[in-house]
Image (cartoon, rainbow, N blue to C red; front, side, top):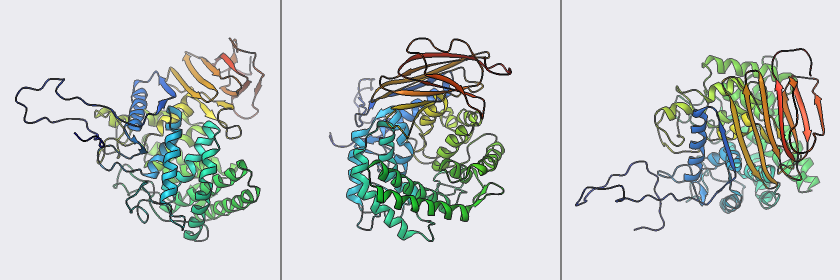
Length: 481
C-alpha cells in the first residue's frame, strides 16, 4: 500500500471480495498535521455548534504539512484560503510551528521582483493567475496574526524582507496607488466563482492598503523607525487614492454597491468616523434586501460578519449565521454536510475551509474574546460578550500563552450573567450592556473599577487576573444601579 499519499473521501466502494464485507473489512485513518487544540466554542443554538464543528473538521482535514484547499481534489496551498481562515485556526488550534514552515515556503517561491504565486508550494504556476493582493496578503497577515494572538515577533522578523519586496512589487503594479489584478471576492452565491458584484480593484486596493499598514506597524514593533514613517506614508497615500476613486462620502456608497464593497471599507478602516453611519446604513439595506442572508464570496463573508458586529448590529449577523436556506452555512448542513463547502450552491468541493472565519466570529463576535493589538498575546484581553435575542447561552475558552481565557454568558428573562476568567499576569477590560448591576463580582480579586461610557449603552470593567461573575438586569430603566 502507498505510504506517502492520502485521500479525502466520504464514501468507499469495495469490489472483488469473495465474502460480504463487514465493518472491519476497511479501516480508515484520519491523518493531518498535529495541530493541538487550544480553543472551544459552544452555545445554545445547535446549528451554530454544527457549523463550529464543520469549521474545525475542515481545518484539520486540510492541513497536511501545508494548509490545503481540499483533501480530495487539488490539495493545493491556496494563499487566499489560508489568510481568510488564519484567525479561526489560531483561536481553535496551535498552528504556530506549521505556519513558520509554510511562511518559509512563501519565501522560497518569491521571485526577485517580489511576486508570489497564489498556491504555495507551486510546480511553477499561480504567478499570473490565482494570485493578487487579496490572496498575497497571507504573506503579511499570517505573521501579523501570530504576533497579535501570541505576542511572537520572530515570524515578523523572518518575513520582513519578503514583505518589503512584495510591497515594492505591488507599487510597480499600481496606477496612482490603485491596483487591480488577480482574484476578487471568490465564490459568491450566484454567477459562478468569479461572478462577484464587487470590482476586484476595490478589494485589491483595500488589501494593498492593509499590507502597507501592517508593514508600518511591523516596522514599529521591530524598531525600524525610518521604515515605519515610509510605510505609514505609503498606507496614507493608498487610503486617499482608494477613497477618491471608490467612496462617495455624501451617500455612503462604495463602487460596486453590494454587501462586499460596503463592508470592505468598514472592515479595512477606509472610512472616516463621520462617514461610518452612512456606509453602515447602506450595508444594512443590502442585508435586509436579501432577507438577512449573505450575498458575498469569501472576502465579503468575513467583512460583513465582523463589521456589522463591531458596529452594533449583531442581530443581523446572528440572523445570517443561523439561516438554513440558500445561501448559508446552515443550508449546507441541511443537505448533510459535515465539512464546509467551496460554493454556496454546492458545486465544486464539499471540503473547503475558506468560509471558516465564521468560527472566529463565534469567539470574537458572540463570546467576545478579542486580542488587544496594543498589548499582543492577550497581555490585555478585550471581553465583549454580545447577548442577542434567540441565543440563551455561550461558552468559549482559548488557551493563550499566559493560560486559559474564558468568557461564558447566559440570559434568563431580562437577567444577563457573564462569567469570565483572566489568566495570571494578564489584565482585561470587559464591556457589558448598560443595566442594573447585581453582585458584580464573585471570586478572584476586586475589579479595578467600573465606569459608564459617555457614548452608547455600555458598562466597562477593568480587572486583573481571576475568575469573575457579573449579573445585570437588562430591563429598560433610567440610570445605572
